[in-house]
Image (tube, rainbow, N blue to C red):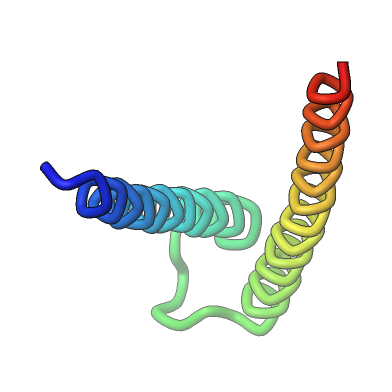
Length: 98
């Protein structure tokens, strides 16, 4: 196989794999958020077909907290990733100068 085509195929597979991993992690996040907020805010035995005002407010707050946490974690992980890349770059420069 042509090296350029092989490299292009590898890049496409990597993008597809990253998209799949992102979709899986998003699904897991949404399922855990749904389960946790449901357990916390909705009693196990339903008395009414619709959510009460208290249940709705509880669910809104619970989801908002999950989304806020998700955003904060994303920012922190991005920050750590940038730091790791910088450390690796500096280490690479140090090794190349030896």
